[in-house]
Length: 369
Image: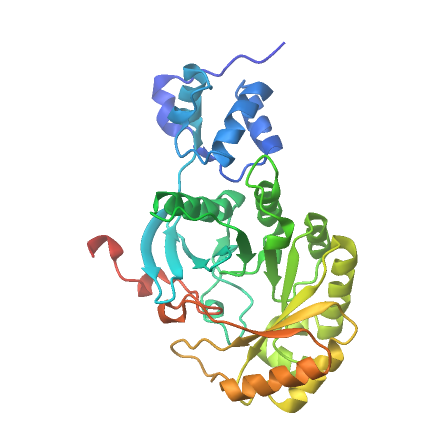
């Protein structure tokens, strides 16, 4: 016998938890619905409205009975985060400061290009990695984002782009924003299931990249089951230098990282792993550093992204010159390592790699502007 639909006493409606649905997989949605007497058919009707049609209100779900829509309004939420500030770079890059229901804020970035449109997603509020060159690392870690909060970033940009004159569509996603994705794997995996699903957002696996500072746990190999691209922040050619720049290296050294990269390639069936390498003047950009790096990566199917340092207030580092970067690039290419110098985007609005940061006591009051 099916469960009856739960009716809420009028006086209790204000106390009901409005569970966010943006990050719920179908199985999770079905379970939530069953708890209040809704059926699998109800879940099958609602689910496409959330993800394929990006509905922001239950009232637009015309094939869902009115009585059920009333229950959905009482129990659940499709609410998007509040946008406290939206900045646009001279190169077209946009950065949004989003605030969630508890007041915590994150930044997310939209990067338009001729043949693709990429969104950079955050996985945590702040970051606990404390990488010395990263502005986000200076911000104290507050908490993980839920799957709904990760998905909310995608919905935010989809909504915004749909309203724009160009009506651009998103093609690529990179988990390279605030926080370490592999320290929030449960939310990450739920989000990936929705993002990659043919009946949800249907992003191509080879157009989704998850970046890690080198957190080599069992969950990294679980990530391989999704078949998405993996980017590893390396930033040094030996353990001594890397440990100075990235404290995580004291737990997971370069040999461990390279072995994990090889295993990820085997399990994910992806073509290559990307290694990110930030060029810092006088720190990791010498010819000898380049030769050491080439030797490390000689037997791995990989690509190296050389990143020009994006400055931020209070940084102790200086970026390498373009001439030094070109010399570093030439050595890697001569050793057979596939390498590019990645173009920085949005650095004039602090939206480029390593520049994201949100501290409430340092942010202007946008409501009064």
